[in-house]
Length: 181
Image 1: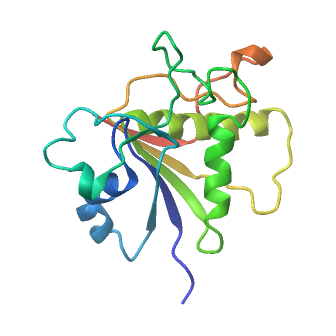
Image 2 (image 1 turned 180 degrees about the vertical axis):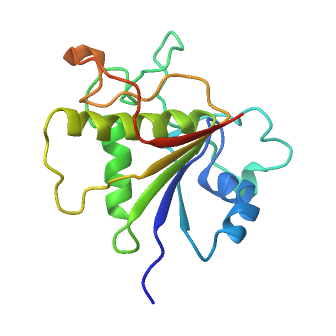
Protein backbone atom coordinates (compact mmCIF):
# COMPACT_ATOMS: atom_id res chain seq x y z
CA UNK A 1 0.00 0.00 0.00
CA UNK A 2 1.35 3.42 -0.97
CA UNK A 3 1.99 5.89 1.86
CA UNK A 4 -0.67 8.54 2.42
CA UNK A 5 -0.04 12.16 1.41
CA UNK A 6 1.19 14.13 4.41
CA UNK A 7 0.02 17.38 6.02
CA UNK A 8 2.57 19.28 8.14
CA UNK A 9 0.90 20.67 11.30
CA UNK A 10 2.09 23.63 13.39
CA UNK A 11 0.76 24.43 16.86
CA UNK A 12 0.09 27.83 18.39
CA UNK A 13 2.32 29.77 20.77
CA UNK A 14 2.53 28.36 24.27
CA UNK A 15 1.36 24.95 23.06
CA UNK A 16 3.04 21.82 21.68
CA UNK A 17 2.78 19.25 18.91
CA UNK A 18 1.13 16.79 21.29
CA UNK A 19 -1.53 19.36 22.28
CA UNK A 20 -2.30 20.22 18.65
CA UNK A 21 -2.51 16.50 17.80
CA UNK A 22 -5.01 16.01 20.64
CA UNK A 23 -7.03 19.01 19.43
CA UNK A 24 -7.08 17.56 15.90
CA UNK A 25 -7.99 14.03 16.96
CA UNK A 26 -11.46 14.04 15.34
CA UNK A 27 -10.14 15.59 12.12
CA UNK A 28 -7.38 12.98 11.95
CA UNK A 29 -9.86 10.14 12.44
CA UNK A 30 -12.23 11.50 9.76
CA UNK A 31 -9.40 11.86 7.23
CA UNK A 32 -7.24 8.88 8.29
CA UNK A 33 -7.72 7.10 4.95
CA UNK A 34 -6.82 10.26 3.00
CA UNK A 35 -3.96 12.02 4.83
CA UNK A 36 -1.26 11.45 7.41
CA UNK A 37 -1.04 14.40 9.80
CA UNK A 38 2.49 15.08 11.08
CA UNK A 39 2.85 17.45 14.04
CA UNK A 40 5.95 19.57 14.67
CA UNK A 41 7.24 21.18 17.87
CA UNK A 42 8.46 24.79 17.83
CA UNK A 43 12.10 25.38 18.82
CA UNK A 44 11.75 27.76 21.78
CA UNK A 45 10.25 27.09 25.22
CA UNK A 46 7.82 29.51 26.88
CA UNK A 47 4.92 29.56 29.34
CA UNK A 48 1.50 28.08 28.56
CA UNK A 49 -0.53 29.98 25.99
CA UNK A 50 -4.14 31.15 26.32
CA UNK A 51 -6.60 28.29 26.92
CA UNK A 52 -3.89 25.66 27.41
CA UNK A 53 -4.25 25.30 31.17
CA UNK A 54 -5.79 23.53 32.99
CA UNK A 55 -6.69 21.15 30.15
CA UNK A 56 -3.17 20.33 28.96
CA UNK A 57 -0.87 19.92 31.97
CA UNK A 58 2.85 20.51 31.68
CA UNK A 59 3.51 17.03 33.06
CA UNK A 60 1.62 15.37 30.21
CA UNK A 61 1.92 17.88 27.34
CA UNK A 62 4.89 20.13 28.16
CA UNK A 63 7.16 21.77 27.56
CA UNK A 64 5.12 24.55 25.97
CA UNK A 65 6.74 26.11 22.95
CA UNK A 66 6.80 29.07 20.55
CA UNK A 67 7.96 29.52 16.96
CA UNK A 68 9.33 33.03 17.59
CA UNK A 69 12.23 34.22 19.71
CA UNK A 70 11.56 37.39 21.72
CA UNK A 71 14.30 39.99 22.04
CA UNK A 72 15.21 41.83 25.27
CA UNK A 73 12.39 44.37 24.75
CA UNK A 74 9.85 41.54 24.37
CA UNK A 75 9.31 41.93 20.60
CA UNK A 76 9.20 38.84 18.40
CA UNK A 77 11.98 38.44 15.86
CA UNK A 78 9.93 38.12 12.60
CA UNK A 79 12.11 35.53 10.89
CA UNK A 80 12.26 33.11 13.84
CA UNK A 81 16.00 33.60 14.42
CA UNK A 82 17.61 34.51 17.70
CA UNK A 83 17.87 38.22 18.47
CA UNK A 84 21.40 38.50 17.03
CA UNK A 85 20.10 37.48 13.58
CA UNK A 86 22.61 34.66 13.31
CA UNK A 87 21.87 31.07 12.46
CA UNK A 88 19.10 29.33 10.65
CA UNK A 89 15.92 31.26 9.83
CA UNK A 90 12.55 29.99 11.01
CA UNK A 91 11.15 28.95 7.62
CA UNK A 92 14.46 27.37 6.67
CA UNK A 93 14.43 25.53 10.04
CA UNK A 94 10.88 24.27 9.46
CA UNK A 95 11.77 23.04 5.96
CA UNK A 96 14.73 21.17 7.46
CA UNK A 97 12.46 19.65 10.13
CA UNK A 98 10.10 18.47 7.39
CA UNK A 99 12.98 16.94 5.38
CA UNK A 100 14.24 15.19 8.52
CA UNK A 101 10.93 13.32 8.86
CA UNK A 102 12.29 11.15 6.07
CA UNK A 103 10.50 8.76 3.80
CA UNK A 104 6.74 8.66 3.57
CA UNK A 105 3.97 10.12 1.55
CA UNK A 106 4.31 13.31 -0.44
CA UNK A 107 3.96 16.54 1.57
CA UNK A 108 0.82 18.06 0.06
CA UNK A 109 -0.48 20.46 2.69
CA UNK A 110 0.30 22.44 5.79
CA UNK A 111 -2.02 23.40 8.64
CA UNK A 112 -1.52 25.79 11.53
CA UNK A 113 -3.42 27.04 14.53
CA UNK A 114 -2.96 30.60 15.89
CA UNK A 115 0.80 31.30 15.84
CA UNK A 116 1.20 28.20 13.66
CA UNK A 117 -0.69 29.98 10.86
CA UNK A 118 2.30 32.29 10.59
CA UNK A 119 4.43 29.24 9.76
CA UNK A 120 1.90 28.06 7.14
CA UNK A 121 1.76 31.53 5.56
CA UNK A 122 5.56 31.76 5.61
CA UNK A 123 5.98 28.34 3.99
CA UNK A 124 3.49 29.12 1.20
CA UNK A 125 4.99 32.56 0.62
CA UNK A 126 8.55 31.19 0.56
CA UNK A 127 7.53 28.49 -1.93
CA UNK A 128 5.78 31.06 -4.12
CA UNK A 129 8.76 33.44 -3.98
CA UNK A 130 11.09 30.65 -5.14
CA UNK A 131 8.87 30.13 -8.20
CA UNK A 132 8.64 33.89 -8.90
CA UNK A 133 12.44 34.14 -8.78
CA UNK A 134 12.82 31.25 -11.24
CA UNK A 135 14.33 28.66 -8.87
CA UNK A 136 13.96 25.14 -10.20
CA UNK A 137 12.31 22.65 -7.88
CA UNK A 138 15.02 20.49 -6.31
CA UNK A 139 14.63 16.76 -5.84
CA UNK A 140 12.88 16.08 -2.54
CA UNK A 141 11.76 19.71 -2.19
CA UNK A 142 8.35 20.14 -0.61
CA UNK A 143 5.63 21.40 -2.97
CA UNK A 144 2.57 22.19 -0.88
CA UNK A 145 -0.75 22.13 -2.75
CA UNK A 146 -2.77 23.81 0.03
CA UNK A 147 -2.67 25.45 3.43
CA UNK A 148 -5.19 25.57 6.28
CA UNK A 149 -5.00 28.53 8.66
CA UNK A 150 -7.06 28.22 11.85
CA UNK A 151 -7.58 31.27 14.08
CA UNK A 152 -4.54 33.22 12.87
CA UNK A 153 -4.29 36.97 12.54
CA UNK A 154 -0.65 38.05 12.20
CA UNK A 155 1.83 38.30 9.33
CA UNK A 156 3.61 35.20 7.99
CA UNK A 157 7.02 34.26 9.36
CA UNK A 158 9.71 35.71 7.10
CA UNK A 159 12.24 33.58 5.26
CA UNK A 160 15.57 34.48 3.71
CA UNK A 161 13.72 35.05 0.42
CA UNK A 162 10.77 37.01 1.79
CA UNK A 163 12.53 39.04 4.51
CA UNK A 164 12.52 42.81 4.26
CA UNK A 165 16.24 43.08 4.96
CA UNK A 166 16.88 41.58 1.52
CA UNK A 167 14.64 44.12 -0.19
CA UNK A 168 12.17 41.64 -1.66
CA UNK A 169 8.53 42.48 -2.03
CA UNK A 170 5.93 39.76 -1.84
CA UNK A 171 2.68 39.36 -3.63
CA UNK A 172 -0.36 37.76 -1.97
CA UNK A 173 -0.22 34.00 -1.51
CA UNK A 174 -1.61 32.32 -4.63
CA UNK A 175 -1.82 28.70 -3.40
CA UNK A 176 -5.14 27.27 -2.35
CA UNK A 177 -5.66 28.09 1.32
CA UNK A 178 -8.52 28.00 3.79
CA UNK A 179 -8.79 30.42 6.68
CA UNK A 180 -10.97 29.33 9.60
CA UNK A 181 -11.98 31.73 12.39
